Image (cartoon, rainbow, N blue to C red):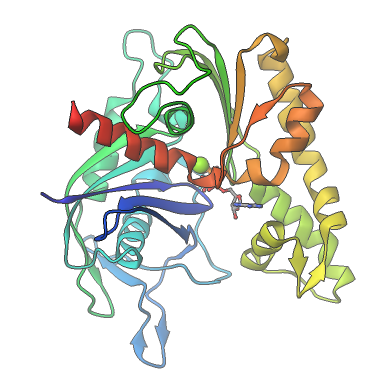
Length: 328
Ligand SMILES: Nc1ncnc2c1ncn2[C@@H]1O[C@H](COP(=O)(O)OP(=O)(O)OP(=O)(O)O)[C@@H](O)[C@H]1O
Ligand SMILES: [Mg+2]
């Protein structure tokens, strides 16, 4: 049977979870940086350059200045998104193999606020069709053959990753009647939902702020200190992860750069949940959880669960859900 590869292709990075040939669950990250051009290097077309059946040209994963926007709704059903999915599969070693994929849509797009049709079926079908669309590697690599595509919402699957074991049972300390606040701090969006362990959504909201805004602010603050005109996004993101820029400690600058985004998230959370201490658990995921999850929890006056590699939580959670389903 074709291998399942879960790809949570967010606006900042594409996160894949799959089983290796040795049977281990592995994860892989590819930055969501896509230029609308088939780039050329000394060997010819770049390894990650693509031609789509519609006639489009894209190159993924470079440190380009001319990257397209990945945080607008039309991106979700774009040829650029298809190129990123294939590049993630290629880098994960699935070139020339048959795969089933599961991809994600931001919560605000997956769910509709229309009474009677809570799920945005039309957009989900378009996304599936787009992922299954035709594409070729410009450099002549064999690509994965995607034989099926499922679409999941972002956010909620992270809960399954954290509170259920591999057979789908609730881990000790969790009960069906609990209400859990899930905060997913991504690159450009922060999704907040109150969910029960079986996935029933009590409420949710989504707002446009995230780690890429911190990265931008960090670039503005750090560029003059380092005598640079600007700091490329890839470098700024790396600095946020490592706490260093050009091998120099920049924790203070990162803290300063994080402040505004954290305040925005705090205000939005306050508007949504007036008494966070009444919630049974608070789960903070997404790359932003690694950056500011602990400070956020402190400021809210709650204890929060922050999983390891919190940016992978949704991808891992969907993998777990799919595995549990196929064993039922
Ligand atoms: N340990 C870390 N420390 C600091 N930043 C991190 C860490 N891990 C990941 N990040 C950064 O967090 C950001 C958000 O990552 P994430 O994968 O959650 O975003 P996304 O899902 O692509 O975005 P969105 O959900 O908004 O579409 C990325 O810019 C990533 O570089
Ligand atoms: Mg995300």
